[in-house]
Length: 478
Image (cartoon, rainbow, N blue to C red; front, side, top):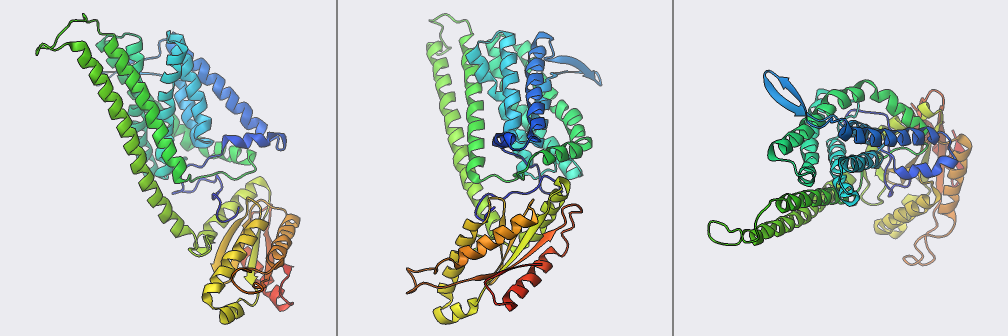
């Protein structure tokens, strides 16, 4: 993809990189790529299984099951849709996991006697829980295959936070069903302990032992590489929406709980004030507090996310052109080469050098030379495909990584890029007559069967030197 678009990396699990994901919109290409049929079928089966087991949770009484450890009595809830949701989120993406848990929670609410509108609102609790867990593992860069003690520690901590967060929906559940305090406490404890134990003793072992094979299977189904980083806009939106929905669930729960208290309309406090207006005031204050907390969370999250994204961009990108810098090349080449081997497709590297660029600096000055570089990058981006990655190698040299590409396609893109730069003068509004610029392009490919990409950059560099020695403004294959 062009250097200014969202970066993508392969799904191969590498310590320190965290979960990767695909957009649900990738299913739009199912008519062109039948490999996605398997993903769609598996996802639909997961949705059906979630809805069925969500209803069974209520009809079979899987909520607040008692058990004893060292003479201490606990209660845990068995809720398979949560397991399904978390696994789908970590293997495919957050939306893939959010849909099953939402529909399962709606089914649970309806099976318990809640109205459809109330079930629809209650269902957001499970979605928030899944998103909090998934987002925590992405931010903390927890390896989804749980290969290190660090990954086990942080995933356990995130599981505890997510379980407590999701259990707040119990307030609405308990109030809607008019449970007495003892029963309500058992339900709340059961949700917290049950979800935490399901992550600890089911999800994490499945991720560790079965995750690598399953993730590789998904990786082979998708043509487009997965994502592993979201912009601050998406991150903040996720946080604000999640907490706003959870705040709504809690507010309605408290409102119903207070409304269920049977009081005479003239009941008074010890100070002689009417009690019911006081309770209404409490509800209003809770609504205002929830709104303020959501707004504050959004503002602070925006500020922190902007700062983090700016620092990440500065570390990965060239400040003048916006291209990826050469420090990021080796890592991305390794991942794309490994993914190409699994998919049985090759990759290409273009080494691009601006012809006679030193003369531009000497004649027009470095300030104009910088503008020429930016203009050339703009033309190259327009000639590249959405999956190509553009790096500034240094000075007037650039490298383009073309993942999952056949040799014939690489040659066509290289020639299109060369022609785009030479098409017309650059900067006609800055320099009278504009600045004529051409590029010499060296092309090299990696083996599509072995995935061997060692030396591919060196071969592209030597091909570029041949292009310059043979007269410049041309493409030479290694």
